[in-house]
Length: 276
Image (cartoon, rainbow, N blue to C red; front, side, top):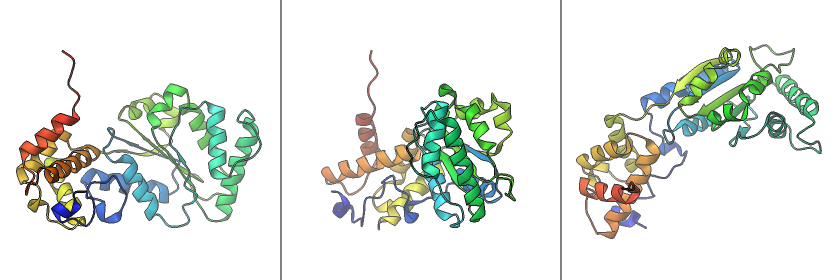
């Protein structure tokens, strides 16, 4: 809608994994480095935490897309609000495929997972399981079953673990895992993805705009980018939403530059007023 007005080749602030859209913020890069070390060295589990929208899943997906082909399969659990048998059943389906057994037939599904790991080792593969929203696991009593699952290891493996689990969740996930010492000991690395600094926020907006074919300073006043940082607290998903709407409003008002007053106006429409 607004691309022609701002002379853009595409919408700059979509929540996508495209290589040219990725901005290497310091904490994102550090998390990728730690996770890559743990996975490539056959560690059992990795934890990555941060506030909603800070880029945990994006960083993890980017890392997984860069790993060699031997790090397969890469099943993902995005709704961990299950009980123990259901989790085991779901994981077995992700690793092997569906079968006629019910979730309650726990030994059967454990055997399927064990066989899948055995076969993966025979093929020279290392599965990587990503569990998103992992801060919900404790609420449903799944942290201890998860630890027990990590004990499933083929005898012929040469690494510490035949597979790696990546737990992705809100900041309270760290404390939840620490309350389960036996699981905590299995976490090889813990990564915290932080909010962007003001310099990183400005750099992020500039990078996204450049990837879309325009210089950020030709569209966003520097003071507007700094204001965006204040209002979004450096959270990328919030930055994307605010910048996208600012571009739309600027187009609708036939503006030549996004200024702080436009940013404040758009942000005011996004925030729900508190009841008096």
